Image 1 (cartoon, rainbow, N blue to C red):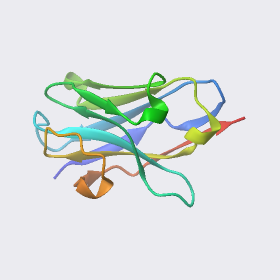
Image 2 (image 1 turned 135 degrees about the vertical axis):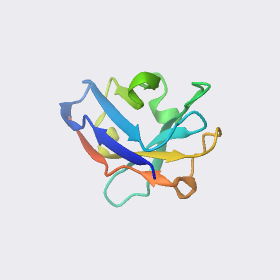
Image 3 (image 1 turned 45 degrees about the vertical axis):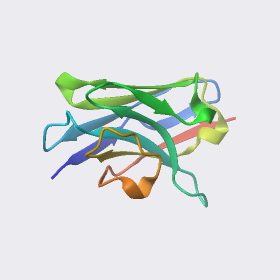
Image 4 (image 1 turned 120 degrees about the vertical axis):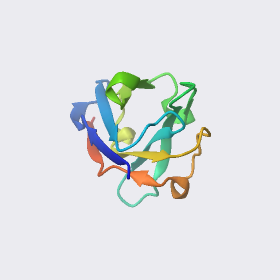
Length: 124
């Protein structure tokens, strides 16, 4: 079984920064993809960024390119999402998800493992 635990959310003013962490445990992650999704009230869950654990290849939704960076620390089994230049429209609950595949899939239904989520609120 895989466990994912997010942390790092909070309240920040527009233009500010936050770093989210997703700590993974349960099995070797060399063939896994870890992805961040977000969900705002009344909206569907949205792909934000993903990373292939073994190759470190990454993918981002267009709305966060140049502002967000996803990275992984193999020694700590942790994936980070550095979020800079935050905007009010980034406000959402952020979830990390994992799947046993090297392909970064953008559909939440394709992910087997989920964290509990962490809230990010950006004030204007």
